[in-house]
Length: 282
Image (cartoon, rainbow, N blue to C red):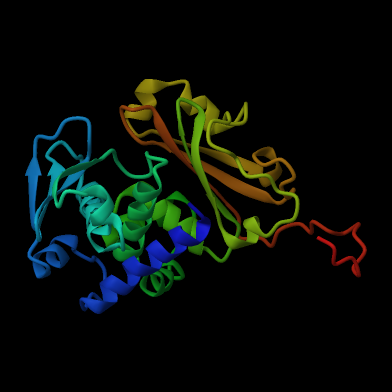
């Protein structure tokens, strides 16, 4: 699946929020489901966060009663609504016109349709115009993610990803499990920095960082402990700028996940000081 599919899925989520009259945070996915006659219930689900049920033209959504907070519940419902609204999903997931489809959880699956549904949920619950307006009022880093998560009633991880992708300053979000990268999102200034190499799934967190330190303490991760220090983007990314930044990391719970925010309010160090200004080959 190409990158464009994720952009379109996210845009479809934002368009759906606008179409159904949601113009302020928080956006309640239960209300959207109700407008389409989709029942939503908490169930004691095992091995998944939520599921979409179909019987002919009738749909229902169940989310795990063990989900820890309203933000996770909203994202799970938004994800299942993605399967309902995105073109081709219902037909592919229910080829016989009925059945049950389970979803593992936010950004846990590499399946194309699961990734599309994740991005639909982000667009639905965190529409770009509303989100950017709020983001510009706030400080940066974990404090901004926490404030936006509370305002929007969305999961911490989904909010952090939206923050990174829409930030106007250099920002990176890295989610890892036991010190191994699950995924990484960069703001536009970092994405456009020539020579920077993204942290790929399965790579290890850089040694000596607060994130690496926190990852070794499962109790601290489970309790949501936070650590931080000043560093440079080049400490984290091969070919990254030497620009100073803040590293802030928080434990995400009992599954060993950490979320790291790398951010700076400075312009990035130039990546082409030694390049010929007339060289357009790259």
